[in-house]
Length: 120
Length: 245
Image (tube, chains in turn brown, cyan):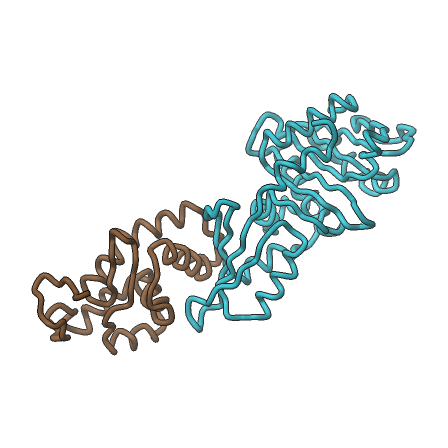
């Protein structure tokens, strides 16, 4: 199957549909959920929204040293689906299929990997 | 319900799952060991990242997400210290966490020390509530004798009524207000079971109970719960059968 990008083309990284600068990447990565999504996808290149919701809820509970409830997970899932994943998809860092609810690691620029290594 | 053992049936069908997201094989093995005495399945999953210390997702039998917490936090709440209820009420010891975390889950091989933690949590809720009915079953007169001051203090300092069931002759040498029922019970169940039941004093949120059967010396099988219907059912059974409450 070919990619169904609206403008066709050979999907070369030209920078046109990527954050144009480090500041855009920093802005995107200021969200802990966005960072955790990309960190998780470093080792697990394909996942689902449900699995990501479990993992991000667990990471959040670990960070805050609390017991996460089903309500916490619902909040994480809604933010993931409606906010975090569409933004990461728009940046090209992930390929988010909202219908199938799958998430695949996309083109993550080196600068983003470097930013993920930092303490936030 | 025709016997205390009948109360186990509804709980036995619910097996929880712990999904352990950690690369620490030792931590996984330790959790498997700790939960081998419970109706809980432990599954290992890869850590979310190499520098994450790991966390656990708890699921109901149908896969529903019940909670998540760090491995470290879980280890802390499954091995708590033991304190009497009036001390717990004044400290930060998070016994409520362990109670909520593993309620309605059958344990197959708990010892007295582990059950005492849960019994104390139930007594602590009754203590805080200040009124209601507490029903406690003792297997032997010696066991009751050891805890008698705790219940005398309940009667003296709160409006909680205390009914004690004991599989022994009891000459009534206890404090006023502690109602003692001597019974051998259906198939000698009073001598086999350890139970602590608090009716919540009309408040469903405070209702809780522990029911455990000693199946081998110092090896108990049972569950605890804060489901008011389940607690009420056991209390109603005791009242009908032994006239307590």
